[in-house]
Image 1 (cartoon, rainbow, N blue to C red):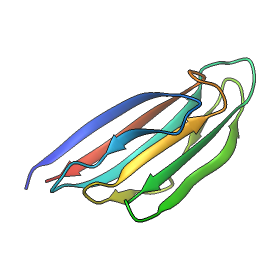
Image 2 (image 1 turned 60 degrees about the vertical axis):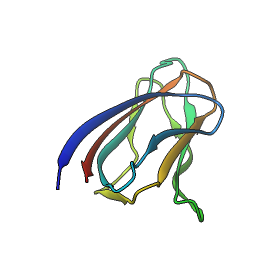
Image 3 (image 1 turned 120 degrees about the vertical axis):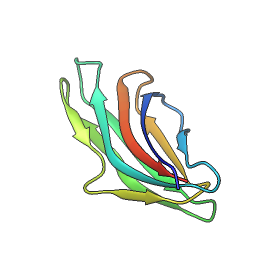
Image 4 (image 1 turned 90 degrees about the vertical axis):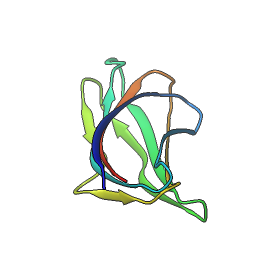
Length: 106
């Protein structure tokens, strides 16, 4: 079994878009997922969901991040199975940046 730590950096757009897919034959453990408002002039809403190919589950749904602030989107750890995807959308493209730390076990 190989354990690989990775960082995922993603500028969120105003269209629901996949920012992480768990590779085949892998289990991913999301250790941290932070959303930062980089616009710094006004609050920005963000939504993040998990899609396992059968259904979706909201991690955060239209949560406002104030100017000059960040939001911790995962309390504890989030386990993702092979093929699971994380998707995000914000009210304004480029106003929110995601930083995710993940352990991939293959």
